Image (cartoon, rainbow, N blue to C red; front, side):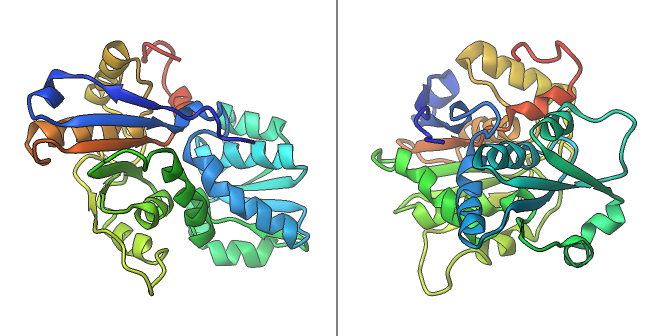
Length: 296
């Protein structure tokens, strides 16, 4: 799959103009409806390595609404590989649309208790079969970061001062840090109190090279991972109405809110030029009740 549909959207708003700050959004969500946003980049080299090693099955981990799970299922289907998804939590009576679609794409689903799910090494030991290639949850790992590194080829021709992205596992952020020149990289954590994120990112950066400074902010989680209080839903709807910018409830909605809040609070100096990475994941909005969002 060729990531040729990516484009940059410029945001025009009083809260930016008042602080003399510019904001562009790198629309990775436009890449593909299923392998959305950063998922294509993070999976790219895992699939390549699995094929080179003669593996015929990709096994990975995620929740019932995981962007990574559905992206893996689709990518494997197109690449002629089998896929297995270890799903966090007991099997429900009714599967989420994410898991239904993953099954239709040929993914075998294995449900695990949350306690069992935490021990990935035990799972691998219990379930691994010959010719299986395991990919960590969310594509976490140096190979995933290597793919995420390539995201910035679509943006570094502009004089950005800051690159901002939502953070789940930290894999994409590590790739952005490695690709950055002089820009400051800022991550907005979607998880509540996950202070281990900084180290998780550092673990993916080669020790022998120097990189621009990066910051992860933890105050914009809206109550925790996948939490979506009414004020977040309202903000996402406003972003669509004002900018025709579709956002998701787990990552990019919180990211865009954080950017607006930081700009308003003068976090950025005048004449700063910001780039927001839209990492996709809009399928996660299907967990909402119908008509909660003004776009689909």
